[in-house]
Image (cartoon, rainbow, N blue to C red; front, side):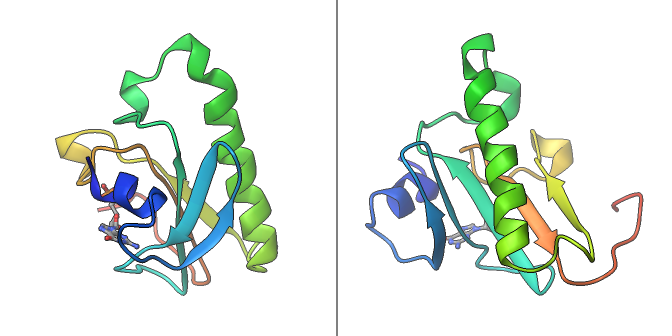
Length: 112
Ligand code: DGP
């Protein structure tokens, strides 16, 4: 069981900002910006690269939910970044799909 599954199960604490039947969103333990929230599916999908066509509605729901949370966090006008790290070169460290919602400060491009 990954650490994120344990957060879903309330076995370890997290600052949860949103929950519905398909997903959970909580503040990143190591925030890279004033707003840094992870939006995760409750289904234990390891990474976006392992999604299947039947996951299309779920993936869309994660993105739409992230945009709604951005509005609630009042970063929708200033801007924000949605990031999904997939695999070693991308720096993926937890094998449970998560969308990073990052905002509240200007960001450079490309990422390092
Ligand atoms: P990634 O590198 O894309 O796999 O990002 C994983 C993120 O998960 C990283 O930004 C730190 C965060 N994280 C890891 N463990 C915990 C935890 O126990 N609680 C919370 N809230 N965030 C965590």
